[in-house]
Amino acid sequence: MTELLLCGGTGDLGGRIARRLAADGVPFRALVRPKSHAAQLRELGAELALGDLLDPPSLDRALAGVRTVVTTASAVSRMIAGDRTVSIDGVDRQGQANLIRAAEHAGVERFVYVSAYGLTARMTRYSPFAAAKKATEELLEASHLRTVLVRPAAFLEVWMSATTGIDPAKRRAVIFGTGRSPVTFVGEDDVAAACVRAATMPDPPAVLDVGGPSALTRRQAVELYERVFGARFRRIVVPRAALHLGVRALRRLKPEVASVLGIALTMDIEGCTPSPEPLRALGIEPLSPADFVAELAR
Image (cartoon, one colour):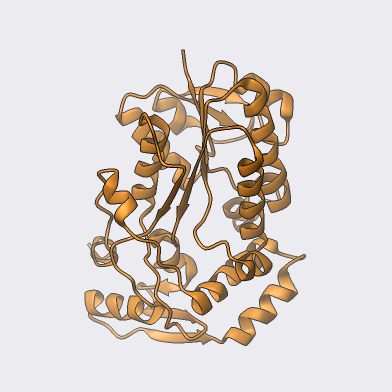
């Protein structure tokens, strides 16, 4: 019997979790929307459950016999890619709330939720995505489910890459704000490994705040790229005032973009430095920024 349900398995982090589950021989069911591209999950041997976080009856069917839920589901990456059929309020807030209620009704024993580190008042005010994460955490705290909150720092693959403006191909880097606050950037594979441990180990911690092994500022991250690639990068500075303006102007029109700007602004003001030790306690040696950039260069 399949006792683990993965939600978000067609996304980047969810896909990494799926591959690790398959590699570890853990049978799992994956909730996939009817029009999702689920071929990779099928190739991994996942049992596919057609459904949607906004369709509660489909969640009841997907959760039949399930003891553990792992969810990374989010609308943000799809919205940034141009999908206007989803929303942060729909998927990240209401959808996760539907999943929690369905898991309670199904008698799920463990609920692993990938949240985010540093959901401060400023972060949730500036970022609709962060506000939805915080709302889900609060629902889980009020729930009788045994919950594991996995709260990573900023992902290397997102915040130290061309995705957010550090582009080695163009020798160009965007600096958000002052670019002088430290962040312990963490690799998605390491977070995926932590999620699998949290889902399968006998007695996981209730909270895993996880960061990488090195604290770098945005400017230091650019300097690391310059050393590895042997070239000077042109810096484009986006002042804090411009980030503030972007958050306010885009909050309703493009909440996914406002969320990215709000996260960038908050990290520049507050930093983001969870320790790597929770990963190491799980037997995971986190990827360093230097190794990440070196691999990109190769």
